[in-house]
Amino acid sequence: MYFMVLSVLVYLSTCHCLVENDNCGFLKWLDTTSVSVEIIKKGFHRDLVMTVQLQPDGLTDVKVLLIHNWPRGVYIDPYQLASLSDQHNWQILLDSTIDLEAPAHKSSGFVTYLYPIMDGPTSVWQNISIPIHGRYQKPSFSGTGFTSVGIELPQLLLRNEKCTQLNKLEPHTVVDAPCTADNSTTCAWVKIQNQKGHGRVNLQFPVGDESFAMPVCGGTLLVTLICCVALSTYAWKHQITNGHHT
Image (cartoon, rainbow, N blue to C red):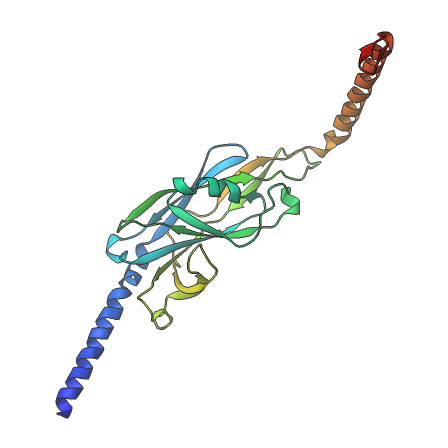
């Protein structure tokens, strides 16, 4: 009798381990997982395109999260993202309110949590595109003309809701991050350590020459005065008062 009970317990334990190992099977594909980024378009309005490479055998019920630490030299327009919500295959969560009008030197960096929407098992997601915008830079006396703003590779994290023993699966790094883009509830995610994608990308934005500030201001004031004098002379010459000729 005791032998039968012990056999049943061992069998159930084995089944539980097999199910747990199956749910955590995506972990064996971490070394072949990568993310790469590129920038398209020119000027102050660009698109950042990310490609996530995953192995198809490990994608069942797996969620993906891209955490991006953005520099203060660029911003994302949340109103634009809302208007384009039906045109992209991802959801995004911002960690703070973004001032759309502030120049770069009066702004701070921010973090986004991007969740690709996966309809089914696949090995590659392409064209995860986010519209980004460059901020105006503080004018400089150096006359360099342009400044470089570096954008780092996003952190790639994976999660399977049925894999509940992540903290025991060394040497994988487990971090807490928002579960979805709809709320701030945190979940345990596995961080991809050895990403094979390229490193940071650099954007070039023009910098105003502060040495031209006085000539431009002086010229603007001079033109304004000339226009005022010309209009006053014209009005006096034609005796225009209260909008009527006299």
